Length: 345
Ligand code: ATP
Ligand code: MG
Ligand code: FE
Image (tube, rainbow, N blue to C red; front, side):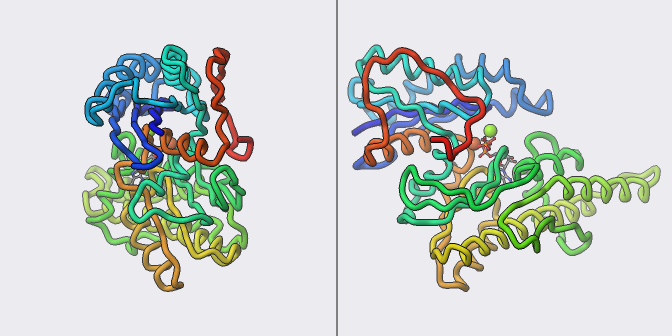
C-alpha cells in the first residue's frame, strides 16, 4: 500500500511517499528557517501562508521522484497535532481534499508518533519493544514502546525541552536562530571542561528532566565573560568553550536518564528521535554507553531527525498495518489538535 504523508505542524513543509512493502519511496522538504530567522522565532501567520504556497509543488516533486501519480496512492496521511493551529490546518485541509477527490481514506497522525517511529526508517531498523528518548524542539520524553500505538510515558521535562535549551542558550550567546545546530558546531572547537555548568536533576532518582536552570547558568556565565572583557569582546574561543560546556551538560543528563530507563525497564534497545537526535555528542555518548551494556541504540537517518513528511506517511502506514487506522472514506468533518498528549491517541 502506498501512503502520501503531509507534515505542516510548525516551520517545515514536508511531503513523502511510503510503501508498506518497499519503505520510503520519496520525500521532499521546505524549511522556513530563513524566513523566520529575521524575527528570531516562528511567526505563525507567515508559517501558515508559506505552507499553502509550498505544499502542492512539493507534492509534485515527490510524485515525480517516485515516478508515480496520485492515482497510485491508497491513503493520505497528515499531521493533525500537536502544533500551530493555522499551520496544521493547511496540511489537514489539503490532505483531506486530496483524499476526498480521489475517494481515499484520510489518516490523521500524531506528530510525536511520527518522530517516535522514524528510527524504523533507518537500516537496520529497531524491532519492538524499545525505550524511546524523544528529544525535539518542544518535547523531551522517555517512552516505553511495546508495539505501534502502545506508548507509556516513563518521564518528561518539567519545563524547557532539550532542543529549547540548545536554542535558548545559543540565543544568549548570539548564535542566531534556531541555534541548536550552530551551538553544537561551535562546541566542536571548544573544551567542555573550562566552564562548569549544572546537570539539573541528574540524581533526582526518576526519569524526569529540567532544563530551565541551565539556561540561567549559561546567561550568568555569559554575563561574567562580558564584564571581564570590559571594553573588549568575548572571544571566539571563550564562546566555543561555553558552547561545549552547554552541550556536555545537556547531553550528560539526556544520556544518564536514558540509561536509567534501560535499567528500569530491562530493555536492550534504545531509540532516539527528534531534532536533538542529530547531535553528534549525544550520538557518540549513547553509542558508547549502550555498547558497554550489550544493548543497541538506533537513530533516525540524519535528514529525518527534524520535522519531515516521511515520518508522517510511515506512522500512518504502520497504523494501517496494525489495524489501528480508520479507513472510512468520505467523512468530510475534521479537526486539528494544537495540544494533544500522545497518550490520548
Ligand atoms: P516538536 O516535535 O516537539 O513539536 P520541533 O518539531 O520543533 O518540536 P524538531 O524539528 O524535532 O522539533 O527538532 C528541532 C530542534 O532540534 C531544535 O530545537 C534544534 O535546535 C534541535 N537540533 C537540531 N539539530 C541539532 C543538533 N545538531 N544539536 C542540538 N540540537 C539540534
Ligand atoms: Mg522545525
Ligand atoms: Fe517535531
